[in-house]
Length: 240
Image 1 (cartoon, rainbow, N blue to C red):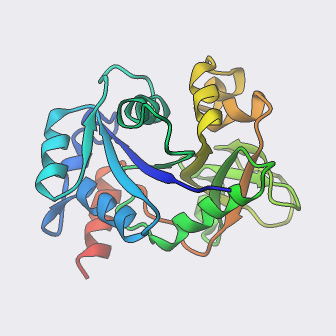
Image 2 (image 1 turned 120 degrees about the horizontal axis):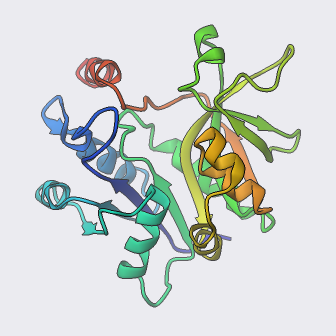
Image 3 (image 1 turned 180 degrees about the horizontal axis):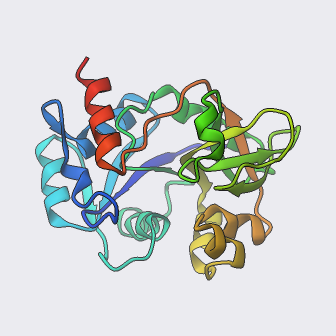
């Protein structure tokens, strides 16, 4: 059972497709502030932004939040949140870590609890989310990651391809994760796996290492902002 979770939001300015996106203004606030607020509204536990740049620290601090600097050369968000956790919690009070992506400003805070609840099952190592794909264009869009679930909700595979083939439901994976602390530590200690490098999907490293990922299905997909077009859409949604 999760008894003391912490929500960590990795954030860096040097995103490949949309540099500087954490500070992109949506309405009257930077995107990273919107995401931080959504995490706080979930009411689950302490929320901290794990930053690669001092300007993000300053932005979150000004908004009333908490942020910590991490090595800007870390290779992934998972490495960033682990380094932040070691800095923030050397005595290991937090037993569950929630990794919330810093580019989902339209996130419904209620779905975070759905991912956390998956760890009530002692057999589950990592929890994540998905939604049924209803837009036909998403089925073949390589930017939309699909997850293949077993009948009992375990993740069998993640891919940018249209999987599985044939008639039936397809699931849009939502990049939000809940980790048991020792599992996150084990995960970041592993080298990138073969399938991870092929698909460019970190979560495949966990599956290849034998970790169990459970997937809860929700009815909303937060908009991931990683291009000028999705930034424009986020502004339209949040400024209505």
